[in-house]
Image (cartoon, rainbow, N blue to C red):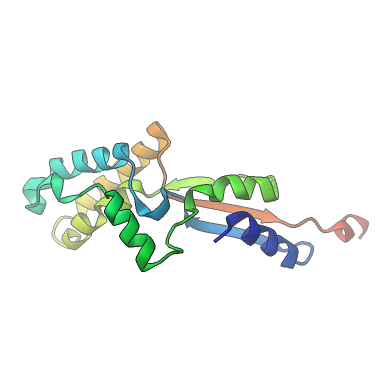
Length: 156
């Protein structure tokens, strides 16, 4: 439940020269999508609606009630996900690298079932995800690697 404590424990448990590797969801807590993310996903879904047969509004923003429902079902679900990059930087001095996933996370349920008949949609989705990441700094997933210093390595 405490990202800083979990990372500190991981670092303390490492032998010198060991690695902490984080590959995790770093998006909004409790999976409550940001308005800009939903808007971007809806624009994409509107463009492919003739193929999916579903309106862009099929993707809904979560409400306070859905937020509370997620918290009740699983109190640990993405509770501090958005804090992971800052905690990783504090504990290691290294950075989490955002790797995208906003569009994939929000739109995959509409696109992946069509992969066999419309593989171009997955390519478009990935391209849109990269554009959303690079142009607006939006990312739901991140990767970070840090190696615990080995003081004996310099004396060998």
